[in-house]
Structures are given as C-alpha cells and as structure tokens.
Image (tube, rainbow, N blue to C red; front, side, top):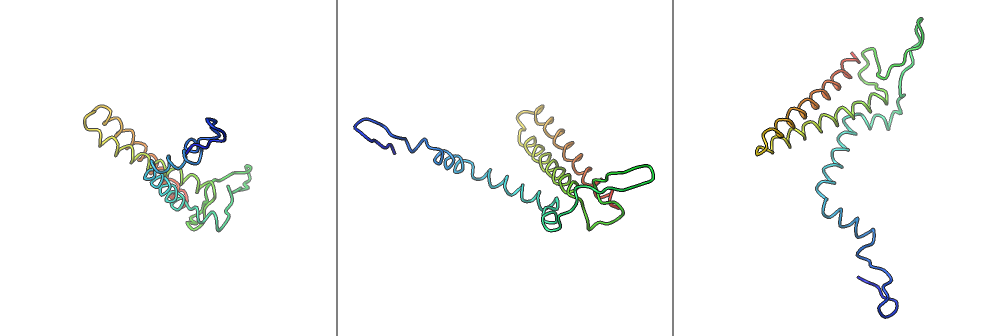
Amino acid sequence: MILRHKVGEVIGDMSSSGFYKVKDFISRNLETILIVGTMIAVLFLLGGGLYDLTERPLWFIVLRAPGGVTYRFYWPGGIMTMQTLSESILAMIAYGGAIAGLLTVYRGLRRVYEPRYSTALVLIGGTVALVSLAIVWLIIASKM
C-alpha cells in the first residue's frame, strides 16, 4: 500500500518496510525456524541448562595442592549429580557437533547422484559425530 500526501508525491511504501520483510522471511522459512528452535531447546536441556539456571554452579573448581593451584573445569571425584558451568557449555557444544555431524551424513546420503561429494559428506559428518560423542563420553568418564 502506497501512501500519498499530495498528488503524485509518495510518502512511504509500506510493502518495503522492515516489518513486512521480517514477516515475509518468517512465512517463507517457518519450518526451518521451528527446526532450529527445537534443536536449540534440546541442546539446552541435554547439556544441563535447567541445572545451570536453578543451581547457579561455579565456572570452574580451584584445587589447592602442595605443588600449586589447579583449575578443574569438571566436577571430579565420582559425583555425577554436580557439574560446573563450563562442563555444561562443553556438553552443549559436543551435542551440537554430534547433531551437525548426523545432519551432514543425512545430506550426504541424499546426494546419490554425486558420489564423490556424497562420500565426502558422509565421512566428514560421521567423523564429526563420532568425535563429538567421544567428547561427551570423556566428560562422563572424567567424573567417575
């Protein structure tokens, strides 16, 4: 809708305003926005985001030893019910890497008409997913 003040003078074009551009972008990409939002929520929950919000854990633990001060970014000593904020952030990043790797594998498996590209995507995605899950396993193993 174009507004006119005097004959022939255009005041503003409402179809080019920022609101309509955002609305058009959301309407075209609604499925992608919902998928990304759901993935962020799942990563937040898997990484211990609710624990971080309710318990307000430390960023790291300072251990004093005869040789000096040691900083630990995980909660040692077999205590599985406690975690540091750094540990939560690392877990969220590792889970995100695993999801990104699996999505890369999925994209690679769908491109059967390009075998070289498809193989590269599957190998890279599988490697990223395995390394990310190994990091999650190391976080858990360090607590035992």
